Image (cartoon, rainbow, N blue to C red):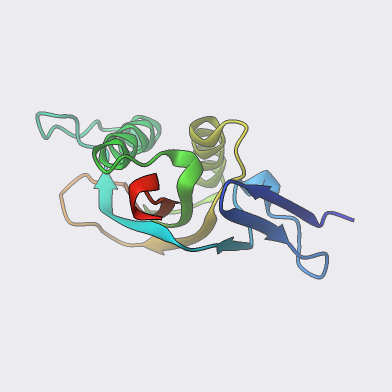
Length: 147
């Protein structure tokens, strides 16, 4: 049985036994966020560095996009552990790219349960040479002055 139900802060992470085990692909089927809370939406982050340059290879773009996501979350006083949903766009998606993405996502989330995830294979993204994009929704605790 692979059903994993865990709670982290205000989030419950659920993998129902009736569904396949998503953990090897670094995501969770269902995430429930309790309120009151702050909801943080992060726009799609690509693999551009701070000067706007894109690496030519997929793995470097994935790592940079996750670094960018971390910076965006930090700007909103949120963390990877508070992310409840991501959407990922991958150009020319295949099993190798899924493995690269899964390893990078697992490293970014570390010991925390991974979020719910939708992966969408696409033919092209916004910029020439862009191979990966990730957006996120985080649910974080309200400051104690607001609860």
